[in-house]
Image (cartoon, rainbow, N blue to C red; front, side, top):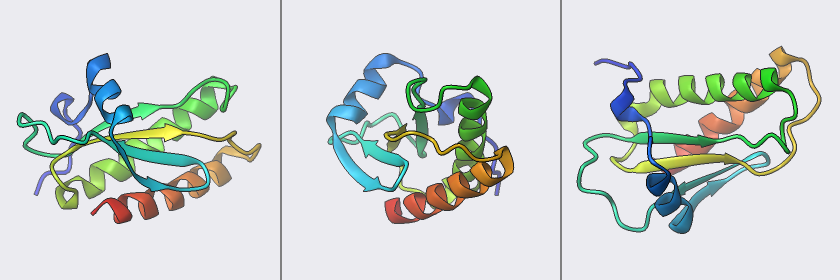
Length: 119
């Protein structure tokens, strides 16, 4: 079983993000919301991920990049168990001022629980 993260596992077009954001909310946590399109797209043969980490909620680039890395890694490991649909993970509240190690642990715990709800 391969657990890589190829380009086919990512959302690329703004229209793909827009359809997921207009769709339904699957899970919500303290920091993140997971959305998916109402209609499953016929072209997806596995789960695909899109990330929205706005600057207004995570001011420092190092914080935004750390959050993205942790989410991608969690998705990459859980991708075979996820349903074949597009998922958009959006940061909806201000990231806490923690050390990067503590932030990684917090984000990983929340993303693992949200992806588990998606299954």
